[in-house]
Length: 264
Image (cartoon, rainbow, N blue to C red):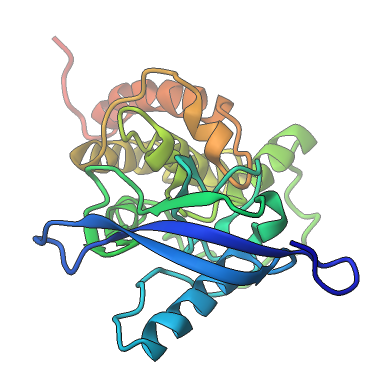
């Protein structure tokens, strides 16, 4: 359906997962939605749907969001079976309705992963990511005031890869897309952006061992399907997982030497 100017207006059917709480039985609700401008973002569309639900005396759909600029990682949902929707390298809040056609049925559901229990509707508990970062995803060494930027030489390849890894926003799309609900891409990105730089070397092996083993408490194992990097809105490279696995093997030896353990 056409609207004024270059804006088209869509009439859609949303099939949205509704669940009252973590222990409740959820189900899909079918919601007709009319008059959606195709230049709206997906979250703006959900805002309009919630306004309609409230006007009708219903309970609005709960979904996570914050910055709506593709930075915070809060807004992730499955859209027609795809993490963040059909457009590659895009978060849910950056996805525009022009990617859909008039008359479409759009299936919206939360991340489906054992490590991300559903709290309500489209909201999941992503605190396991926090536990991984808390276990070692930081540099605790107090080195005083920041040195001049050019004081410590860093190879360009290392700095570029560290910056690419640091682009991870922790949205959880990698876990949701993985058949095993694995979190290797997230964890390896958090490790790479510190382990590749000089400032991260003092705690590199302790950090790697602790973060990987914390990850394994919540998430499945990686079997190299590659779905994680395809779903990632920041297109984090699969290479980071290989580097993490290499460092983890090294950490098991280096950390034992540091603690004075005797090898058989």
